[in-house]
Structures are given as C-alpha cells and as structure tokens.
Length: 308
Length: 111
Image 1: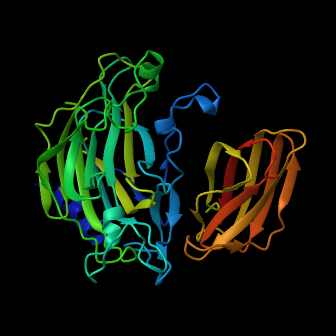
Image 2: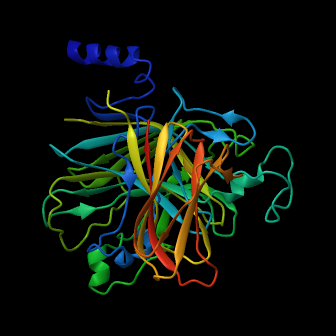
Image 3: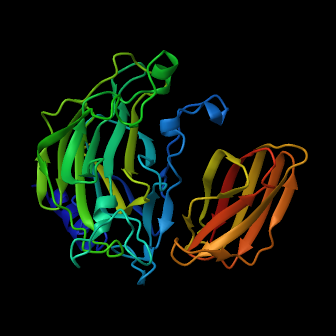
C-alpha cells in the first residue's frame, strides 16, 4: 500500500460523513440530500413535444422529493445525519413506479461503485386497520405486505451506436398476492425503448423488462431487511453496488453484511445501437407498489466512486 | 450560497373533470412556493379553480390561507404561497357538467 493510498484512506476515515462509505480511489460525486437534489430528477420517456405520446409505463415516474422523513405519529425522523433525505413516492395505485435518475458520462471505462444508505416503507394510515389487513400482533406490522419492490440500476453506453445496456437489481419484498418474498432479483430481458415501440414492439407494464416475469433470483439473493414493526419507524441500510463499464457487467451487490457476487449474471445488451449516447453513464433508483398504497424509498446520501 | 430551488411537475397532461387532488409533495425545506397550472385545453365556458391545501403528515389536509385562483380557457395561472407546511397539494375544480380541462401542474419552490 502506498503512502498516498494510506493518507487518502485516513482522510476518508476522519471525515464523519464519508467514513461510513468505502469509496474506490476516485469519488465521482457525493450527494448529501441536506444540500438539495444533487441532480437526481424524474425520468420521462422520449417524446416529440407532445406529452400525450410518452409511453404510459414511463410517463409518470414522479418528481423526487426532499423529505425530512416525517410521520403522523412522531413527527420528524430526519436522515442519518442532518435533516433531509431524497424520497421517491409512488402513487396509491397498483403497479405504479417512481424512478429517479442521475445522468453523467464517463471518462474511462472501469469499475463504478454506487453506495447509499436507504430505507423503505409503505404509507401509514391513521385509525383502524384497513380491511386488506386481517390481524395485528404487535410485532409484524401489516404495512410490510403493502410494500412491493425497489431497484438499483444504470443505463450505460460505451459508444454512439455501441454497446448499451441497463443493469437493474430488484429487491422483491412481496409478490403480487402480497406474500413476502424478500429476495434480490436480476432482469433477463431488455428494457423496451421508445424506438423499439415505434418500430413495433409491444408496450410494457414493467418499465425494466419486456415481460413482467423476466426476473430471476440472484444466487443466494434472499435477504431480510429491517422493517422495525411500524411504517413510521425507519432504519437505514447500507448498500454498495459495483458494475464494470469495461466488461458491461454487474460485479457485486452488498447490503449490510450480505455480499452477492454478480459477475456471472447475464446483462441483456441491445442488438441495435443508439445515436448520441457516447459514454452514457446514468444511475437509477426506483420504487414500485403492488397495491393501491403509496410506497416510498428514502436515500440519506449517495456516494459514487470509480477506479480510474 | 445561492438559494436552493426546485420545480416539481406534479401532474402532467391530466384532465380535470369536476375535482382533482394532486399527489402529496414534501416542502418542509422550502420557504416559499408558487403553483403554476398550464391549461392546455379548455372549453371557453369552463372555469378552472385552483386552491392550495396543506398537511402536517401527508395524510390529512386543510386549506392553505392563500386565496384560490380561477381561469377561463387555455393559458397559465399561478398561486403564490408563503408560510408553507411540510406537505402541499393542489385541488383543481371545474363545474361538474363542464368538459374536461387538460393541465400540467408545476410546484416551484425555493428557500
């Protein structure tokens, strides 16, 4: 280990906001949402100026919110540090997804590491247990069955008309019958693009894949996240996701102590290239509800680092 | 440092037929706001009314003190707000028998 590397690690360790992260050699950006949205914005489908032409599955991804993480029973929770977190909120409509994107390009191919502290919740209610929930035992909060899934992913293209792909890793909390699944999944088909639809591909109902069933469990992908008994108690989780823009593959996903090797997972690549996407490097986070209940994902902060 | 600001498109090309409540939107960080409603299409006889509502929890709502605003026909209307609450939403109404009005709703915020 070089002196420069040791010195850099010491500086990161001494910084109270960075020391909970484990960045690669170059920090590309560090988004503390106490400072604002930092470039995370709503994704919208391509259009010619007429918003009625935006494909339905990508027409209503909702604007991200700067949230102080407040609830009806205790007031403000706040973030890991400071007050504010980035919040994505679905509508209270089954299968609705909220997705935020941050858009960059890249200087060199190589490893890219996305780290965040996140928490997930379904919307709470005031008063009697909703009819969809049959019982309450004081421990398993019924609202956990109201939370559908969330994804971490990207959109990468090396060259104009070159290799383009979307990686998407989904934590499936419940299936569409409301049963707990609690597994990490990867997608097995391409994300249908606007051009593909204009060329005759069918519209999709799951933004990420051609067919809603095009998801497979990551080997060893079962994981129990902390839900903590109420929809108004949030506990932050560490997430580290690494992908490689030189190979066009996922590398690794870590959530708290669990580390999943993703190197053998296939990544669908578009057979036909796209104009204007030279060195595209987009980061995506989304949350999706399976029920007519709003689902939320909160990010305390995001740190993205690279190995060049 | 410059003041932080944000524009949220809270509804996009939606139709108002009687009453529409926008999704809850968190604004605890903001000191002032202004709603904009771009009326894309509307019958010349239809009046669109907009009124801001506020909430401490995103679940229960009451009117903001700002006076409602109205417009007849296509164009832009706005409603400025101070003394924000943690959550905002906009209520858009037309006469029940009126033709649908198509709108884009913006919530602009700053410290």
